[in-house]
Length: 473
Ligand code: PMP
Image (cartoon, rainbow, N blue to C red; front, side, top):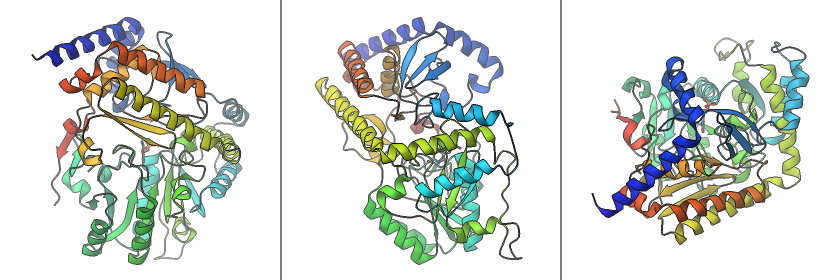
């Protein structure tokens, strides 16, 4: 064992011991949860070693765990809580509508929420509500197939679009499926392409006349938050329009977050369809597909034979609680947008990114920080920053860093996710508090040794380990 590993091993042991000491109830809860919940949690990404935290409540920018520890929360339940926890206006709206019943068919509230989306989002001529980003993506793909009469969907390496088997490939920089259970046939109608390479996209579209849609996440969030250049998105828009291919912006991450009108308003590029989730419901389980009337029209059941309809109907398409959250959230986003609060939120994220870069530099920890609007992601590496270079990084050292911050009362990200989000509830003082905690952690622990040794808490979601080879048939 070389000296760096010895140091790193000591760092790891100390952080784990401290974590175990202050989270005994979470440990007990994990033991109980493992008897009833698959994997002891409600989703794979919620687990992290040695056992996950269990949370009991949140308010504003804070969450409280089962042991009563308080954390400044920059994970925001993986993004939806852009307004923070329990925003009073959202809570009041839920109470108001809950008094009328939990589910009505065709509620007037859906019209109001759709109208607010229409006012914010350039492409949103028509809207259909769904329950999750996954469902919204699924419906967008079906609409694109019906509209074009073609079969395939082109997605990009490093872009995540939810749980559909056909799109759970190429999350890293190789054409592999994530996890088991996704057969080659699931991806037989998916074409993979590198991002920000317009020639590659042109070649792919030219060589396959059966592509109905191009789908992309403008933040490239799952691939490392590399964002998009407006120039590239404009070129993609022109190319897809020319080829008669439906362009889908998956704005589940960027919608109402990167800007009130989403990434499409930031880049001034209007897709044919866009999908929304997360911040749309601000904690309520709501998603939407929005886009050109000409395409969404095919959902109308009275379409003439051969022109439709495209079938889409879900029991919970009009869940009152979710719509009640969304109506309050969208009104708030509009006010925040008009008052310049989105710009202040981005400035706060920039301050956090700069502060983190300085802190890592001071401590000689090789770290690259990506920041886009109110989102950040960190990479422990001194390689030239790129999606390809970073997509195979071992997740252990970063997971250990996030765990050390948890011990210091900062939930910057769940250790296995590397998803840092700021909300409108975060203040300038919160940012300074995070940076103070980072300084304390880096003063105390030699993270340059941890990075050199490449050890830490190995994440079960480490993409470099969980990808199954996928052979394109
Ligand atoms: N698209 C993107 C870009 C996402 O980030 C996600 C979820 N993280 C989804 C789709 C899927 O959304 P959901 O988890 O609500 O199904």
